[in-house]
Every structure is written in C-alpha cells, then in structure tokens.
Figure 1 (tube, rainbow, N blue to C red):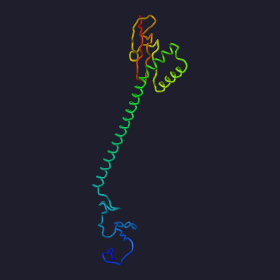
Figure 2: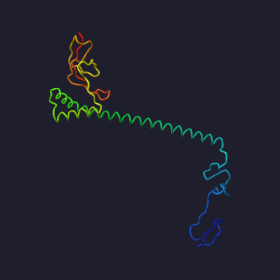
Figure 3: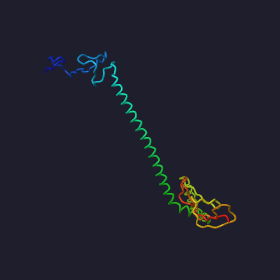
Figure 4: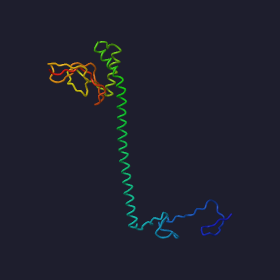
Length: 197
C-alpha cells in the first residue's frame, strides 16, 4: 500500500498514522509560515504585532462598553429580584405564623381564665405554661391591662362610662386581652372604657 507525502508524491508504505502540521504560526519561532498571506491569522484578525485600525479599536471599545452596561444592568436586576424574593418570603412566613397563632388565641384565653379561677394546676398547668412560652418565642405578645390609656388602634371598647378617677379615656376593665405579633395587632384588646367626668 502506498500513500502521498506532503509534496504530493507517492512514497514508501509507512506503519502507523501520518501527522501533518497545518498550523499557520511556527510553534518554535512564532513566525508566520510560508503560504499564509501577511496580516491575517486563522480568524481574519490582525497578526500578532500588527496595530489594530482606529475604526476597529473604536468599535471594540464600544462593544465592550455595551457588554459592561448590559452586565451591570443584569446584576442590578438580579439584586432587586433577590431583595423582592426575600421580602416576599418573609411576609409569607409572618402571615403563616400569624394564621397559626390566631387559631391558638381561644386556647390561650381558656388558659388565662383557668388561671384566674385557680383551676390551672398539675399537668394542665405545665402544658399551659409550655404553650404560652412557645407562642412568646414565635413573637406573640399579650397586651391590655386595667389602667392603660385607651388607644382605638389596639383596643376595642365594649362599654363606656364616666369616672372622676381618670384624667383621660382609660381602660378600666379588660374583658379579653389583645395580642400582637411584632408590631402587627393580631387581635385588639376588648375593654371597658371610662372618660373623665
């Protein structure tokens, strides 16, 4: 079996693969090999060492500036997206906790009434205290005591009277305590209000 050498002539049969170096730049000297037109490389870009034309350099700088502006805009959009997702996630978490705690308020009311009547004893007492401490850890706080100044944003007035013992609208009796989750009112305190005479 015969084959053709790089010059196109037939040569003797060789064992193994034949490797031809078709690189345009000589790997040892870095010089352009024969047969390659001056001023070009494989990609059509100027050969190493040649100056870029002013038009090409200007166009290249314009493209770099556009890509940089695009990248900065994408980074800003992504940062805004992350903030929005984190804010929405926190709002959803707070809403879920508020829904669960709202359903537990009647149980907390029962525990409070049992404590007032002296019926919170034994195992029931430890369960009640554990439940109260758990909801406090979740951020639920109780408010509404007799003597508090009446605030219509956190109190619900069920009865109204006049008294010489108060100098401003005051909660004189608490029928049902109120609860807050952080700054959010989960349930207003239901109170009897007395105005000064």
